[in-house]
Amino acid sequence: MNKFPNHQSDKDPGNHKPVKPMIMVVDDEDSVLKMTELILEEEGYQVEPCLTGKEAIDKFNKSISAVVLDISMPDMTGLQVFEKIKAKNPYVPIIFHTGSFTQNDERRDIRRQYRPHAYVIKGSDPEQLLDTVASAVESYGNILENVKFNEELCRRNEEIDELNKYLEKKVKEQVDEIQRINKLKRYLSPQIVDTVISKGNDICLENSRKLLTIFFSDIRGFTTMTENLEPEDTVNLLNEYFSEMTKLVFKHGGTIDKFMGDGLLAFYGDPLECKDHAEKAVQTAIEMKDVVKLLQSRWK
Image (cartoon, rainbow, N blue to C red; front, side, top):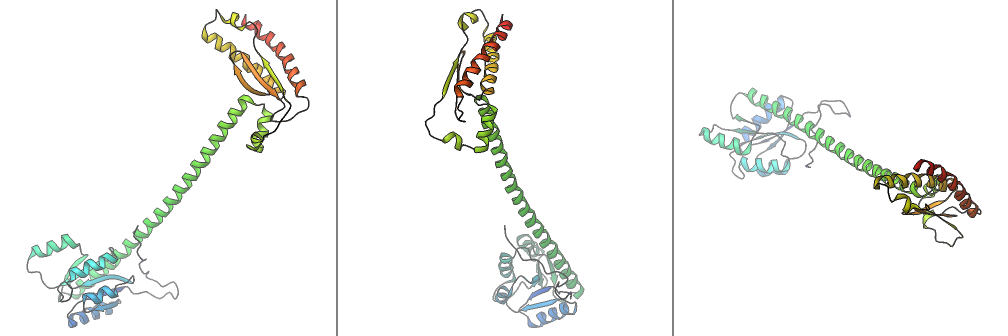
């Protein structure tokens, strides 16, 4: 985005005195230049007079609020100066201060190609020039306010974009964490899940030898039991069985390794160490037998 200087305010915040807008006047006729300068200064403007186009281009700066520019000049035409100044600041208003046009087509062509703020005929009523300059200064102030507003809007939009990216990242991290926890809950007891979450991945990355108790169980006579069942009924039976068995494994601090058909493989003593892992596995098996009896009464 192009950056342009802020328009001078009507008040200087340092001394609270009015700041007069600076008007650049460019004309190769010394008498016209001085007369225009006098008219503008009497109205309260600061004036930067220039006798040549090159001088105007060299002196043009951020303090200029409008340019009164002659079209016909020997070293550089006003149209060439117009293009050079607009290249420095495309928003500054330029008023063509010229003699009468020989043809209406000439004025129309210039207006279409260069888009000046206005035309003022030399030697016309000074009030017309003052009104046109006042309009140009006010227009320039409004334009720069809009530019400042748009720049602020773009800055805030960039901040919002950055905030949205940050929030999207945090949401993704939270979703990933929830999915990770849900996966852990399928195979680990709640107390082990809490430990893994609190310690992060470090607990899962430790490489060591441990004495564990491996636990395996399956449904006796499962094949015969399910021969006459519909596939949906078999799935429902296994879901109910594994749901109850998993609760018991987790109750005694075990970890589910895998499900294999109607079989369940678990182990005790890892990732959290415990001295009585064998006793926990045996206690799980005893309670499983009692739960299976209840399930069998419903399956019949």
